[in-house]
Length: 74
Image 1: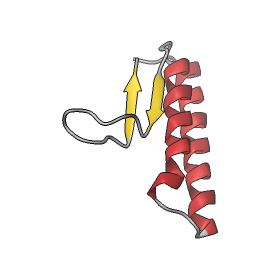
Image 2 (image 1 turned 60 degrees about the horizontal axis):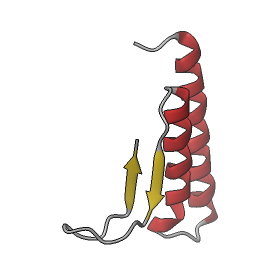
Image 3 (image 1 turned 120 degrees about the horizontal axis):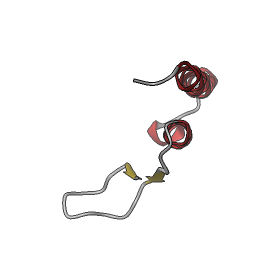
Image 4 (image 1 turned 90 degrees about the vertical axis):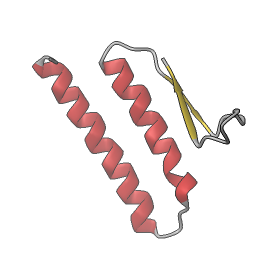
């Protein structure tokens, strides 16, 4: 499916994502939105590793079904 180099890069990106989340969580002063940037960076990095151009948006405008927290365009 993915070659060894891609898997290693994805592992590194995921490790960094969890480390960022933990750092925010351990600080204790957070809300749901505090974690959005971490997810945005992880999606963008993962897409790049896999050869996609991803464009994650945090708190995009209202849609016909509501107000999304996150939107990703590929």
